[in-house]
Image 1 (cartoon, rainbow, N blue to C red):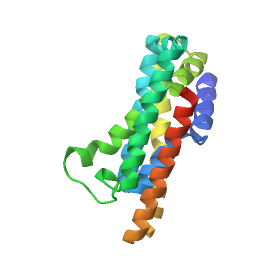
Image 2 (image 1 turned 180 degrees about the vertical axis):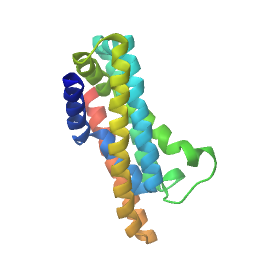
Image 3 (image 1 turned 90 degrees about the vertical axis):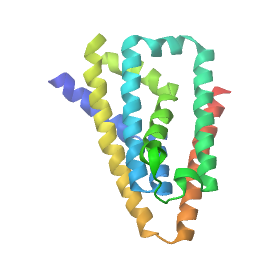
Image 4 (image 1 turned 120 degrees about the vertical axis):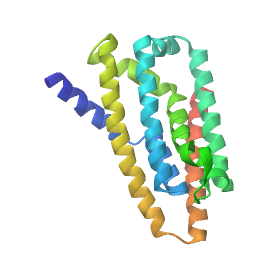
Length: 198
């Protein structure tokens, strides 16, 4: 029990620290509304589960041992963030603040959150360093699941708060401005990631 309490305390402290996942969910909620932000939060949390499985399988350690592969994944993540940022600045797709029908409208935010998290090799390396302090092998799976649950609750709360602020600025001009701010934040994240890989 003391070990679990220490793990939860450390996990909450790390999740609450501002980072790319929080900024991405904020950008989604501000640019496309609360529902898109919550879907992005759930996608990020699912990405945490992917990283947990990868850590158990030893894939993250392999990534750490191959700097070229690490840089390639980082650049892929930066390119994806840049693509999302440009879409948000242009105001097309799911970032125009209007509801969309079909599969893209229902799953787009989730998929973007998942890819943003999975394409961040720093998260993989973090799980290699953090999780083994609290267990080994398959013991890490429930710990990673707990981390994902805490992440989902926190980021969904961030999305709801940001979406509420967005709904208070319901004018079309304000929505366009908020979408541009969200796009700029996403592009800035892409630039930071690319600079680290080059």
